[in-house]
Length: 379
Ligand code: COA
Image (tube, rainbow, N blue to C red; front, side, top):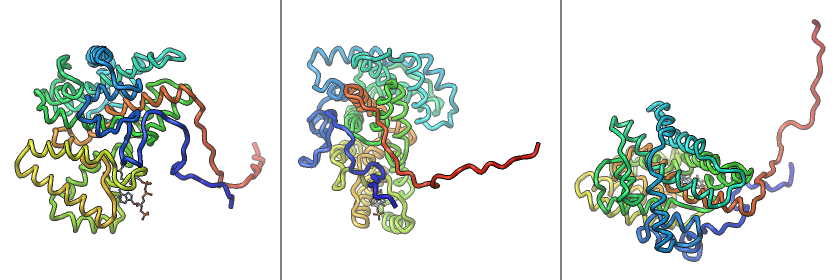
């Protein structure tokens, strides 16, 4: 037995400094460059939040205008990227499609050697701007619908909804979606961001870091949870089944997706903001289906708190919000990617600004030293 202390899952380990964001225990909020995310979400557009994360400050009018011009000019899906998506089976998970698409974008737009932050941000902006088109193209092709062209007169979130659904989006829908984009944009050293930083620490390129981060985000313990949270609601179906369902699920030691968090042990600070947006979506859709979903949402949340003392994380309200907006469930995690490209990029640039190769140690517990027994085989 060795006395080396093992930090399984790096739980509680501080591996570096960051100026990008902070989970602030004092205010129970998530701060982006010092600003509480609940003061940003729905109050400034997602595009401003991206600039805040990348540049450290909210944009001036001139900076905003320049960013919007560049973002809107880069939205069209590159034919090479479209061809890469077309080469994939329609049965491929949308996260596989998006991972491949970001890789294809990178192959046609790679960074120069030793890129400046500006050169990295230019490329990140093109990934950010094209991602809605990739997601929309993929959802529409699965539904047998023709792809649509981006609209220059619409902001990022409104255009996203237009591209996917082909209808002038309702302002309440745009608001809820934009709120979700801001809440998902950044979250310090979570698994996917850390993955991006590990890749950046080898002096690899931006697109490799983004592709690796997409892979980490795909797992159900991380970004995949919004998709799985909706699957739980589908499975339970009615509020009056929650009690019996929970009893069985907990007896089977099932993980309740959309609940619990590694960092927030007393409630995810993003939840109230996302729940407010979700409430507006439910109100805008009066009827028995919204009543059923709203009651089920509340009942499961109450039941999990009573029986497991676990609170929901942001994936719980956002999963239902994306469902109400009309997204197919497997597309939920790609929506998280679209937002998190902002945070991942900020971390890649920060990692490079004071780089140290990330290379931890492990405690070997396998066979002790032994020698190969050489046996002579007759020819
Ligand atoms: N469902 C059931 N039990 C849960 C749970 C969940 N969602 N989250 C935590 N627990 C339980 C664990 O089983 C463990 O119980 P035990 O002490 O009896 O073994 C206890 O709570 C502590 O959990 P632990 O796994 O140590 O917490 P963690 O910090 O490592 O895990 C998550 C954090 C996010 C991985 C975990 O809460 C989880 O799996 N949640 C569901 C996935 C999810 O929603 N992910 C999105 C996060 S934003």
